[in-house]
Image (cartoon, rainbow, N blue to C red; front, side, top):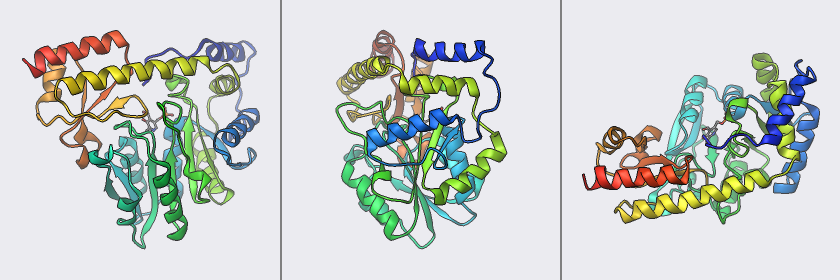
Length: 340
Ligand SMILES: Cc1ncc(COP(=O)(O)O)c(C=O)c1O
């Protein structure tokens, strides 16, 4: 998670809401003023229109939005195409819903970007959905516009749904984020405040989807969690409407760290893609003991295989830590793991 503290203006908005005793339930789908701002943001950023009254739901993080999407639309025996490797929660929510996972490899030769041609090969008459995640956890890959658009077209031609997890949409370097919602009606878009505004513990996310989907999503949301936390929603409103300089600062800092970690890993001889978003790199490291050796030396990494079979032979490293600590960690790896 981001190592930054939630911007002060956001924390202040939360404090103010508590001081004013703003501690009741909000509307089930979230504070109307927050939904209205989300609708404005979506329009401005991606040129898509969603009705704040019934096509946007404020959720308890992107996590709840993922859970609700799977519960609402995935039945036993449905096939769901899943990038391999991908964020662990996807497999978990699909398993809970009873769906069959159809993995599609995100290849290193394609900089781990999911390619529409590879997706097309996996479509059957049981395909119900695909989960997209650009920028990606665990690889940092940012999908190309052509692939987003082609997969959006496939979703219309073959009548399946796209669940697009866009939580890292703002943490992106010299690249533009494209949302499939611009090109297909069959999309549930998931986003949130955890990463962009460093507010993971406040637990606010949202989803937007056409009414055909949002009605079912709303039923599960309403009957499971009632509404997202009222104070945190006030913070989220301030995050969206207040100054954005902290976000720009964080993204610049992430980019400097990305440059550092990629160049140091490449110097050590580990082939590493220059990840274009999120805060992860996914170097090729075939030593099966690397993660343990690094941990013993004081550097925490995660085996790529934890994110899917195609992650084997890679290690996920997060650079959500200070520049100085990343330098220190790279020195430790170089001295004690690579040359040790
Ligand atoms: C790809 C991805 N989606 C969703 C989430 C969950 O986000 P939230 O804190 O909004 O539940 C994470 C958190 O690590 C993530 O990496």
